[in-house]
Length: 494
Ligand code: NAD
Image 1 (cartoon, rainbow, N blue to C red):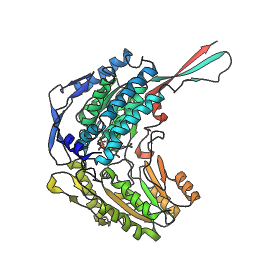
Image 2: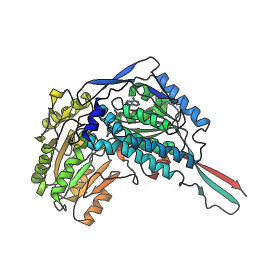
Image 3: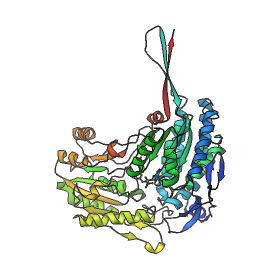
Image 4: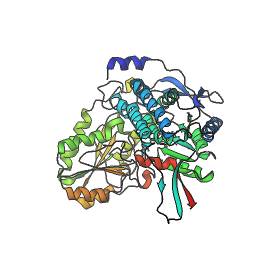
């Protein structure tokens, strides 16, 4: 990464962006726009279209038409694969520009954004491009006088609604498998992270994706998101975001055509450190990184640190030292370790959680407040709060900010009980040298992923999803193809 290149890109003016429907960029039906405010300095630097319910209808109609005439689904998998690889090539060729554009919009530190956003999106698209001509249907083991085939078909029109923390990465987790399988897609980005996804769609068309197969409708969740959720012509809805919006999507489905709804929701993930951890210094560093990267705006963030009581004080102090030493600031500086909080609203919410934690007996050992206010941007000091009881608000509710709750535990059973004491079940981590204990914890912790002696590692080969109120669907891996395909049985009498 070259700082001078980044500085050139950050200075480039960004033209107002429209909706991307049927391969064409256009304004909202009523011409309305939303200002795009950079969390780096709190200033508006361009606009996006504020779509209407009619715009969403037009996008769904374009997607439906593209699906019905089979301009994409009718192409052989090997042909779709070629287009998807070309798309990934184009994304890689402009990775830095895409990353900088995204950071101006959402505030993630560039050192993380480059890998986690365009490069990860390209890798995801390649993974499903490669997979799609290697996934076969089935011949069922019936009696001799019958041939029963199980075909795997695209579902039709997929609606995707994504959040602002990693728009390209999470967008690609939906687009990769949905498009590879032959569906058409209408994607609704978050209000505060639309720009890089609009560019991604433009590149898809440059790569040869036919018009109408991928449509992007920007605007308010309560307007265009709702219209997508209520559409009678969307077959599957795939969502990443908060629990309250996830609930609404289930209601929309019930009130419309019973479309399948896949929810990837929040978390309050326990990161558990036993006194017999193999390397407590490393564990402390990883615990800090496990919550503070991208300002804690990571669904799998290890936001609850559970520490065995014998080592609690020293370990919490070590994590606090790492937190206090982090370089927080301009997310487009390559040396920055933690960038800006996404929006003023999110920052206020993060700060309010700190006050609630204090009122409930928590002790703020480092951070706790807004910093760099003179920049106009939304920055918060990495915050570590100890003496958080398992029942406290900070232990139960997702902050989605740079705030770590630390709680001590007595023994393995106590750790397990506390780990499983929230409504969430997304991720978890355990540090121990005891192999049997590690496996007992893996079995006992009710989450979609458990890390052992590390935190946060993953790649495309493994699924990501939660249990409980963290959701019901899995992104990534071959399993994700199941969300975007239907099974059809052919029963043939011989
Ligand atoms: P959010 O739920 O506020 O918004 C997500 C998306 O839903 C946005 O595009 C928004 O415009 C849209 N939306 C809002 N209201 C809507 C409505 N009434 N109908 C339809 N769509 C609507 O979430 P956010 O603040 O953008 O993202 C943060 C949340 O996402 C956190 O809870 C985080 O844990 C979660 N998340 C989960 C994962 C995962 O894989 N499980 C990954 C990243 C983020």
